Amino acid sequence: MSKASKSVFHFHLDLHSGVPVYRQIADQVRGAIAAGALCAGDQLPTVRQLAVDLEVNPNTVVRAYRELEYNGLLETHQGTGTFISDQKIPRSGDERQRQLGQIVSDAIARAGAAGFTVQDILDQLSRAATRGGTRPMSRTAGDEQ
Image (cartoon, rainbow, N blue to C red; front, top):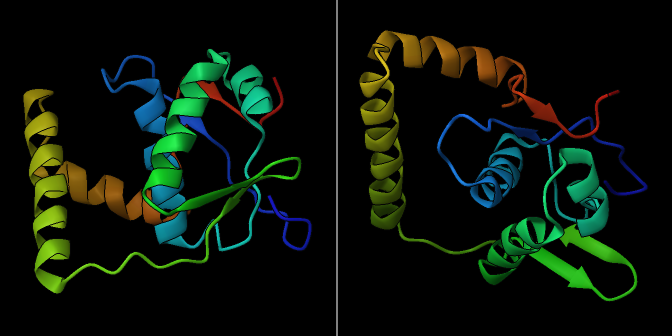
């Protein structure tokens, strides 16, 4: 994280979710930005450090970081690191609503297939928002091991 503000944001992996690890990393960065846990200028761990912490191949972290950089959420500065971008990606209100609707539909379908109700989802969202968007999972970077 940036030197000015040491964030308590930690990456978490769920190796049983069926979601690719690179996608989990990228989604967690997006979620942390949306929740305010990561802000413009905050520095992310190096590829090597995050790969070691999460016990994954460095190419997995590179893939996540590249996707985020391509989408304008990260900036990589050779020799200094990878930082949260201060650029805002403009999206129309319709596009934002379509994207959010797709996310919600996917979550409901996956949760329903696993035997959860919409109320279970709402309760978990409430708990996650209270904790800053993080939840304990099987592998955690940044925690004592």
